[in-house]
Amino acid sequence: MSACRNFCTQVTMAIFAAFLLCLPANAEEMTVSAAASLTNVFTELKGMFENRHKGLVVNTNFAASNPLLKQIQEGAPVDVFASADQATMDKAVAAKVVNAGTRKNFALNDLVLIVPKGSKKPASLSDLKDFSKIALGNPDSVPAGRYTKAALTSAGLWEKLMPQYIQGNSVRQVLDYVARGEVDAGFVYRTDAKQMADKVDTVMIVGGHDPVSYPIAVATTGKNAKMGQEFLNYVLSSEGQAVLAKYGFSKP
Image (cartoon, rainbow, N blue to C red):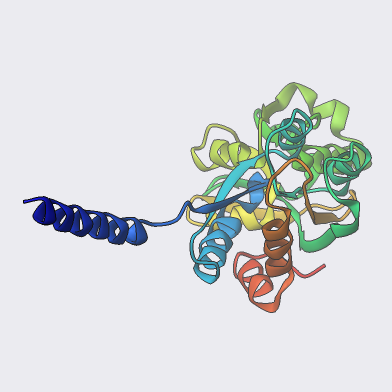
C-alpha cells in the first residue's frame, strides 16, 4: 500500500509539474501615452507591435497632450510619450519625465477647418463671423487648440470670434461636435477629418501657426524602457511610417 501511495504521489506531482509548465508566463507589459489624434494609427501599430513581440501587452492611453504630460509628471507608469506638438515635449524634457536623448520627430499633420457634411462652407476664415458655433480644442491643454489660436490671431480674428467658440477637451471631441452637427464649423487635424469623411467636409488647410510636428520619446516613469525604445524604433521604421501614411500623416 505504501509503495502504491508513493507511486500515486509521484504521478500526481508529475502531472502538476506538467500543468505548471503549460501555464502562460506572466505577460510583459508596457504603456504608451499618445495624443488623441494618434488614436487610430497607434491602435493599429500596437497590434502589429504585439504580434512581433509575443507575450507583450501594450497598454495605450489617448488624450490631449497636456493632460497626458500631467499624468506622467504625477508618476503615471508610462514607457513611451508621443505628443502632438513640440512645446509639450519640451516641457516633458524640462521636467525630466522623458529621456531627452531618445526624442525623435516621427510625423507631420495639417490643421484644417471642417463643417458638418453638406452644410454651408466659409470661403475664408473671415467668413466664420457668420457662424454661430465654432469648435476648437482648449488652447490651454490641447495642441490643436493652440495651433488654432495662433492661426486666428495671425488672421486678426481670435478676439472677434471669441463669443462663438465651443471648446473641446481634445481634438477628437471637436471632431465629434462637428460630425454630430452640434456646431457649424471646427478646427481639427487633416488626419482626424479623414477618419470621418462621411460625416464632415474639409473646407481648407489652415496656416498661420507653427508646423504640426509630432515628437516621441521614451518616458522615465515606466518599468519597461527597453520595450519603450523598441516601440519608438518601430514607429520610425519603414513599416511604422507606412501605417502612419495610411492614416494621412506625413514624414517629418
